[in-house]
Image 1 (cartoon, rainbow, N blue to C red):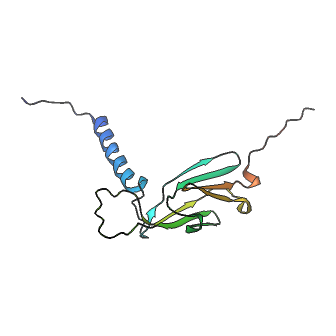
Image 2: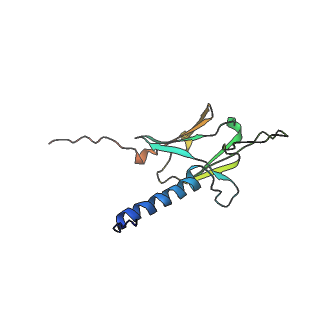
Image 3: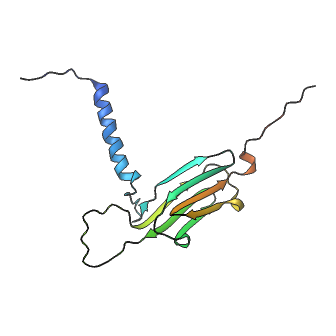
Length: 146
């Protein structure tokens, strides 16, 4: 028996959106996109406080001196390389952890106090604290009555 369903453009648009979201997740969220440099895109989290921008990125298996961080003007670049253990006669049945060169470049659209930037590395997690310049920090203004 043939089943007839009414065409619903909203349902079809949602399905298309889910397909595009899945495609973008596979390309960018997992760091498989190379951006034309041969390096994979380092996934990271960023949040803003009243006084700073904080960025966190997982870089397991590296030491602090194997990570290159550059802040030039309003451009932040993080680069490095995660090397794979190249043992002979190893037949992988599952190979998901990213290896090779990684890089991430961000444009920070908030003025940063370059002299107070901090980078901490603990348990494979890189944390960057980019303090906002004094001019953009919120400040309390008292109202005087006359």
